[in-house]
Image (cartoon, rainbow, N blue to C red; front, side, top):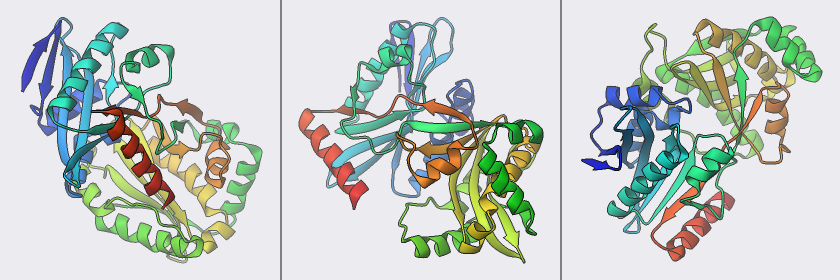
Length: 340
């Protein structure tokens, strides 16, 4: 579908993998959750994928990009747009016009509620653009993340808080071997570590199909796996692991886990120092270190924040809903799922 509007062209589901990812690569706010491959992964989980772009007719540049995931729940079509829509334009009014047309498509698709989480900074200009859709009454995830720039070992060591440097030096006293696993091996080694941690801490977190996503992402131009488990082994047994995906010059930190032994020898601290080195070898510029809570109070926050990256506050979550009633019940359902 192609529709011309005021100085803009909207396209719906007229995108192949290469066209979509090429458009995505032009956005400074590109993210793995808006990649074509993420949509292919979600199809395996029963989601329908809808691709939408809006292009400026004068500059011929894509100014809005949104990969929408749709699923029927009790006969009702609901949607989720992780990492999107993302908008890039010189004039906020152009962004507003593009977002208005995006809303119309969501209505035409008979989606009763779409949850959006744009991977965009919380700035006055972006707030103005997104003021045309409603802020969610209940946020399922935090709008905060932290970004680690991939710098030299010396620069990274200087920026890290002293206590973390101390833990890193403690980890170096043990004989840990660092290794990359991809495909089924990436899934297997993560499962070994995560399952032990899950049992010890009574965790129940949703985990993607790591093996499937690794196959879907494939390799980059240097024939390196775009999804891998970076793992620390002691006596050939994994003690700490994280799952990383690559999108161009960006890396994304999806999950991490450590065994009891790994925590004892501070292996996770050594993992991040060595991961930075590995990403530098892969020509990565920055690592999205994953979400942190709004108040930075959890143990995971303490671990991430003291590597002293740049905190990124995103716009948050928005709903495009057919009515206030649908929005109310959608937000209540999310709240129930979060607390269950």
